[in-house]
Length: 90
Image 1 (spheres, rainbow, N blue to C red):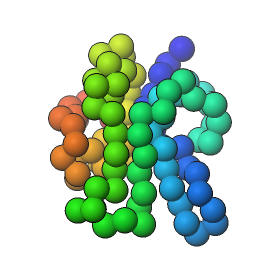
Image 2: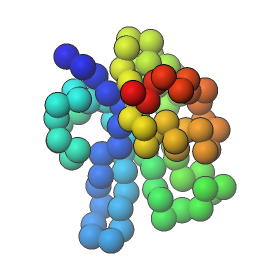
Image 3: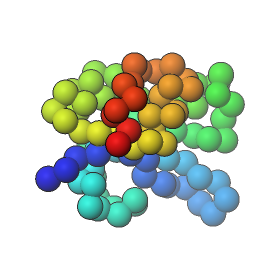
């Protein structure tokens, strides 16, 4: 089973809210997931801590081979939450 760390869309129409989840790469965007790692609210300003993520669990899942999505890698780099290698977004 290929495991990925990605965003799962929640919220209403035109008011998106995302959960950072660990999921099987074959499951749909809003489908079932293995673990919820945090949240991302794009409506908040970047300096207002719009991304909240459990760093310990993120490190654990990265250690077990889960790959973050390109969008999540971009968010983590922008907000400086975690060191992410360039090959992790494949």
